[in-house]
Structure formats: C-alpha cells, structure tokens
Image 1 (cartoon, rainbow, N blue to C red):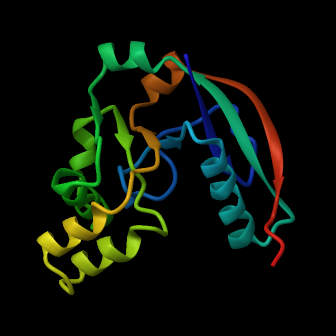
Image 2 (cartoon, rainbow, N blue to C red):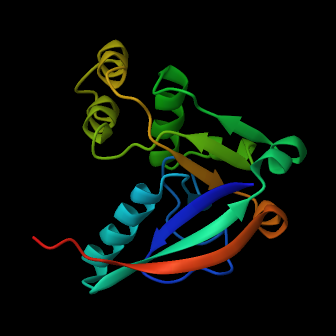
Length: 167
C-alpha cells in the first residue's frame, strides 16, 4: 500500500473522478500525492481561494501496485519532452489524459509553471523550455481518471486540518 494525501477545503471520504476542473496537468480526475507537505500546500491554496480559516488533508491507502497491473497506468519520471507535451495538451483542453486510468509524475507547480506557460505562449522554444525544466527534480502527483480505480484501490483512512499561512 502507498500512503497518499489530498489537500482540499473539505474532507473527501468518497472521492469522485468526474468533477472539478478539467484542464489540469493530467486532465480530469482525482489528484493525490505521496508528499504530505505538498497536500498541505494544496489545502492552503484552497483556503486562500475561498478565504477560509483552515483547509483539510485527507489520507488514503492506495494499492497502486494492483491498480498498475489491472488498469492503464503511465508514469512520467522527469520533466522531459513527453511530460511537457502532455501537460500543455491537457492544460489547453486536450484529452491525452483519456488514454490512461492512473497517471503519475511531476506537478507543473510554482517552480516550473512559468516555463510551461512561456512555452505555451510561444515566448520560448521547446529546447529552451526543456533546458529550464531540467534544472528541477519533479515533485509528485497521481491523477486517477477512472472511478473504478478509486472504488477498488483507494481507501480513505483519516483527515486533519491545516491552518492558513499567516502573512
């Protein structure tokens, strides 16, 4: 079992894959991470957006190994050409994500989003984007795009509150 976390403004005991924003890094689905601090940051982002006093991190046990053998799984090991094209396609409303049930890899977060956005806007070429991206180690996210994977392999275990950043 892999321990994973989901940051939000509410406890998510029964995750759904077909709701939420569609033009995200790995497309439409339920997003988790193995990095607890990253989930806490996601929760704090929701807190700032909705102007709430605190956010929530939900914890799950995910049988990723079983899901990988029974469903369409893809992992992006690096911020590379394949990752960049996949992210850009999905953020532009494409549906490359539909070919997978579970997608794992780095997040287009604050460290690398400017590079991705500059590439999308045509301000830098692909080689420059890849050179800039190569300076970073990918962090971590898993997007589960198929509800059946959530229902069979993801088990809610607990949740806790995180306070908003004090600025």
